Length: 258
Image (spheres, rainbow, N blue to C red):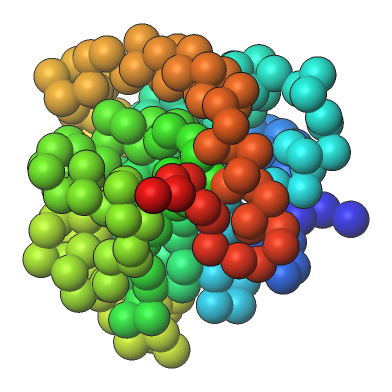
């Protein structure tokens, strides 16, 4: 059963993540997204892409159960090299507007995917959570570069350490999102904006996006590679084992005992 619904209407390709309960990303979903963005690149009828989620969650990040099921033999670095790293680059290299319509909680790797989009619209119920530190990992999926670039190094450091959610209105004030809408109007607002963009000079926008990548994110590929190396190291720390155990047991992690 596919976890990604695709709909093309009047130049707007809507990609809707649908993997109950929390739209956590597994390998199948990531590969579906990679395929969808490859098709968007080739399809001349696709002018704008909207990426959103079902229900009240945009995405809960990587499915921990899937990673845990891989056992110690699963290389976190190799996983990133095959999944999130190429997906983030696909989004940034697609010379068409990509709009994230963040309909609810957006955490972990899902945050990186949203940050890679050109614009972010959020419902009033949206919450942005870095998430990785809570299970003893480092930010990956481009979060390590894109989050400080958008909200500043100090804020990014605080919310990485605290794991506290960033509410939609705060995200708007800090420039993390472009617009905030009531939950019931988010999707229609995203569609209206996308339809407006379909009539824009998208060839020029594509070159502009290439320019923005060069001037603002020239080391994105290098940063993604470095994230994968550090994540591999973090995955072998006792903190990660404790973080995953705590998550699965639904209790706070204990990283330090006085």
